[in-house]
Image (cartoon, rainbow, N blue to C red):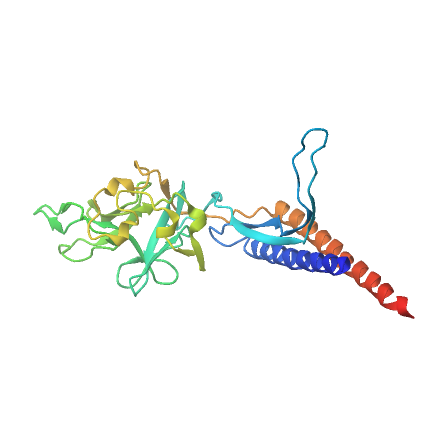
Length: 309
């Protein structure tokens, strides 16, 4: 019965617009979440019932047009907007924002690597640079520091394997103390000492992806499925190899194009509240129209049932 088809079309619309409102609600709820990326529902028509196929014309006959009736709508996808959010100054030296398309890589205690744009980091009790979940920020470390008789530190050559970013506190001569650390736009981590000397102890690296839409949100601003997102660079995901063959591909501000690191800033959510409220009104009215379609179909079915009386 045709009315059953009308009813199912209305129900399919109710399901899709419910999901649309869920996505909009999630966007609005995360308007103040660091580096959050908003999402948008993609909607497409569902299968069409063919009443008559099209036929080509020939001779004195005109071509026959197709006659099809759609069966409703469906969710075609949920698309994430990876546009960069604005960088907000925090004044905290370990808060890092990326001006560009790169991602920080962090590792948990099990050695699993995640990508993140949320640069709310801190130094933990072991001297490692970690995120709020205690996962260690990845990069490359310089070699062991040697001190001259005059108290001038010199770091060895940078390593070739990815490692966690760490303070170096061993071997500091008597009378000299570690005063502060800074991170520049290229990700270089520099230690400053009480005698006015300084030395670079490592460099934070960033990863860029050809297809960030293939990343999977894990929560806490973390992403998985890094290999599916087309990691750029000579070694793909730079933490997945024993030796980085082209560290320049992952250096902030370098040839890899991952962007520069802005210390003392955090990336804001890219949610546009004006757009979200506009989308919410549209989804709400669409839901109301679909519910009205279900109500009208129900009324007509009731009339058909009552014909027997």
